[in-house]
Length: 435
Ligand code: DLL
Image (cartoon, rainbow, N blue to C red; front, top):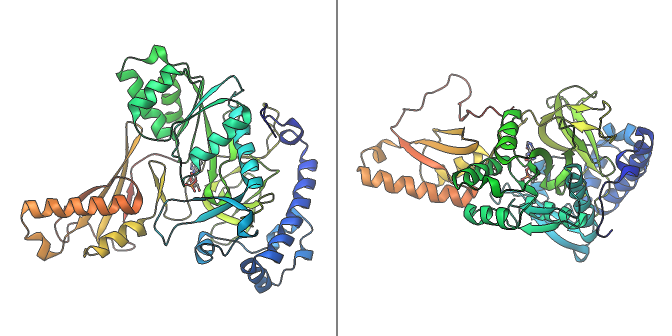
């Protein structure tokens, strides 16, 4: 696997029968491997009374137990490893507290396949080795930077490992190196677009395409970004647990993301009953990885609500398409591309002596997310001076930044001023029209 054009028609355009046969074989192998090498899986399967020999192929998938983030947390850090540690060369991790953190492991083979998935996404967006790919997803534990970076190398494009932040430098490199493909979160793409216009540098931009994901974005936002940067904007989806970006990606049709079915089997389930739903119905997306060595996942519940479609696609790819995620079946928010659980915010507040009366307000202002946390003070705190209240707010801002990795604007409010609900507390007000 060297430099080259990573459109792989023999796989990406294979007939559904060929893909199914490949999935059957790879699934049998994966199930056998995890049963033999991961005690956690063996227990789950034994509890269900399923043996590897019961799984002949995809048609038997429903017999296997689901896996959730809680399982991964329980097995943290090494409990889900299917290969000896000495065979692993990398970890990546989701954002979050120690309690919420999920660590995924990769062998070199896993990295190669992940890069290949991202290379397919870049090629589907028109990328070739003549392109200059500007990657300003975060690098480090987050999968965005390393994933698109690896994909761009595979395609043979000149790769700019910019990482996130320092917008002036981003704009300067975009102009000076005449980048043709931009990879970042859609919010940051919108922000870069504004910065380019403010600096009067629109004429210096040579971008033709953008590959944007890691958070929900609307068709309206797509049009804004396309207009502002003069590009075609493509969606890309993925999650750390399954390797990162590149689980699925948009093609020229821009109507749903092709799932790399030679690596992942997708199912849609009813999030309440776990029942498998037919293609075309809306439900929770569940993935089984069938080529990963170090950290294979079987029937992993993503909590993303989607629809799958097998309608023929004008690009010629036959792999099933998923819609843009339409919501989540848990309370996770994605703010500025960072996964935020309300429970993380609550933990910080309680640690600092606040009652659990708070409200999280998320807005999208000019295509960029803002996070506000309104917290009720205790009556003792309420009698503090204005200066003392400001100091308390600053303390919470810092603590939240260190817990979440992003800035949250904290406002301390009077005791009992947050409206009480008769049913469940309304802790989250998400004013973004994302889905
Ligand atoms: O966000 C991986 C990624 C990086 C994807 C760069 C695309 C581009 P996590 O941080 O583990 O991984 O977050 C995974 O983000 O379950 C979805 O809820 C959400 N998500 C990812 N891509 C999209 C997208 C990366 N294109 C979680 N649209 C997933 C909407 C997305 N939501």
